[in-house]
Image (cartoon, rainbow, N blue to C red; front, side):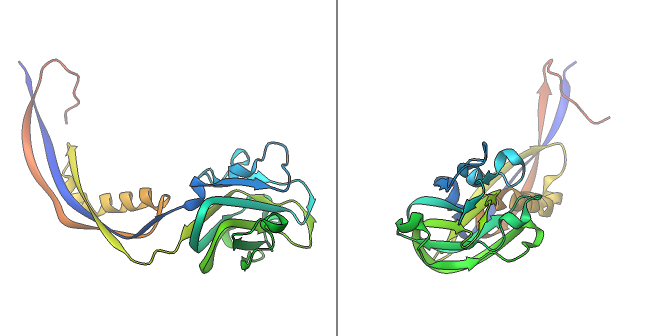
Length: 224
């Protein structure tokens, strides 16, 4: 005899509000004053924050620098720097410079901020208050040292906020509607690594509808 399987089908309307500004660095290209072994400049914009294979580093240079080309001019609100766990001092005291010029490899552009010493939690967020430029440089001026960066994130200033509505549908053996807050938290965490300054909220909670489905020989797990 065929088994009767009960699935709980739900659909809800989700509102995503905010600037929805993505990490501009992921679309850019990077270079630096020299390369320490295979710690390439592009590693600092690969979207992965930790691990030697995902970090960039110069050799021991005089005034070591790293430069990001955003490929277009933007109004920059925030630059986020993640340092290497074991090489904290090789990122601190670095100048963040933003501008349009490539004079002196871009290191003559205006200063947005200087990374503190030490970086709290190995990551620091620096406000640039809408400085405009195509190039973002990280340079340790007046030093002969390495410059090690595990991730550089760059976010633009967005002049207005907007809302986006998404219709979500679920098929589950549990009552997803009863866990709507948990789902919202999981979605927020998943999106946080790709977009900034946003909020999620249900405008219509998932509604439940039970549907009987026949199992014709497939292996389907059912509650005991």
